[in-house]
Amino acid sequence: MLSAALLAGCGSLNADKPATAPLAPAEAPKVAPPPPSAVSEEQTRIAAAYGGIYVKPDLTAFLNGIADRLASASERPDLRYKVVMLNSPLVNAFALPNGSLYVTRGLLAVANDSSELAAVIAHEMAHVSARHALQRADEERKAVLVSRIVSDVLQDSQGGAVALARGKLSLASFSRAQELEADRIGVQTIARAGFDPYGASRFLLSMGRQSELRSAALGQKPAQPGLDFMATHPSTPERVQLAVASARQIGAPGVGERGRDAYLDAINGMVYGDDPSQGFARGRRFLHPRLGFSFVAPDGFVFENGADALLGVASDGRALRMDAAKLSPGQTLEGYIKENWIDGAEPGPVETLDVNGMETVTLVAKGKEWTFRFAAIHYGSDVYRLIFATREITPQIDQGFRDSIMSFRRLSQEEIDAARPLKLDVVRIKPGDTEATFANRMALSDRAVDRFSVLNGLGPGEPLPPGSRVKVIDE
Image (cartoon, rainbow, N blue to C red; front, side, top):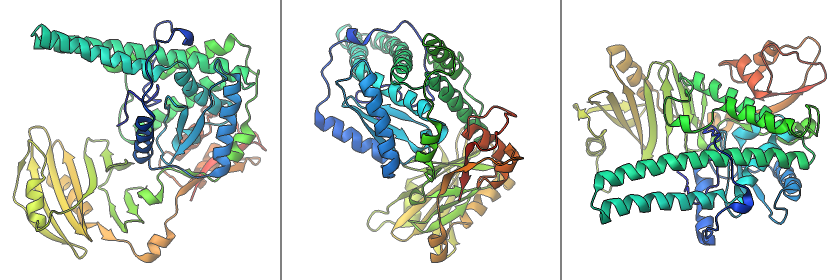
């Protein structure tokens, strides 16, 4: 989605990575930076991929204040940075070589104090100051060049493929070392800026728990390091251990500023989860107030709203995708669906339906391992495509797919006006409050106790001191 030649470091903070001894920033190879036009194009692509820019002026000022404080304490105080918030529930942060730093709403919701946020920002600043994006681009060019020499000059296509594969493994190890280096530099930077150096390890722990909670909600098993390419990336426990070790070199726990109250004040009222302008889920129901429609997924589904499509998964392996398309001039809905079934699947007969007054066609297509039900709904000037997939289709499963298609409908103006995003509210703990107390008032009922504890960085059964403040999810 994003150019490796321009993005520095963490394309995803969940793709965690430790490795060999890092190079000092001064030893970084001199690689020509990308032209300003390329950086500007990348900034536009990033915003589009992550739901646009999230506007909350006080919070933006708070983030950039922390960035300025860190820059002054960094190994390159001559560099300046600009923090941009992205309107996405995904947990992510990354940087461009020009000093633009990006953090998502999802990441800000996971952090619990200023030192944790400072650790994230300092990590991304380290990628910029150490010129990791440019180094990575150079390594990628070398890997491709070697494979082309073997394939074209030596006329050995198989050898070229092997060379490219080896180059990719080397690149993965290279990126892994960069993440370790950025972690180390980040901990040192936040400590010099007066923040608690243990903020990095606390945030990494929360991020790991958030990832596990998300995997559980989607019915997926957490990735197992050592079984696939993730073996070349450090697992969260490894990064936590390294972050703690770096912090211990600075001092014992308790050193430095956490800034919890200032951080909670800054994020209070921030949108949580999907923004209604992009459509949002309430349980199995998905609503898109701006486009004016809703539908209900089959039993057991959890939604994942992306920039290009809405995805849904169930723990038994069923999946769905919804996106929009346009009919070509003179093209019928039946003609469209015949031309747009899943590649490699054998389509069955086309069935015409009336879905709440909207012309709809559907068919079943059987592939080698998957069976798909494909539906195209003519809504206004657009065609909304619903694709359901299952490894083994039964009458009961297919009926669930059909019921979901038939649930597609227009929203009333009252429903559109009433659509509100979820938000983070910061509330004070009263005597007698427990995790269950706050879980019961959360707007999300699924795994509410776990969500509350992960949202606030609380361990299982950790006491809630009266007078302290915590985050809850409200409508």
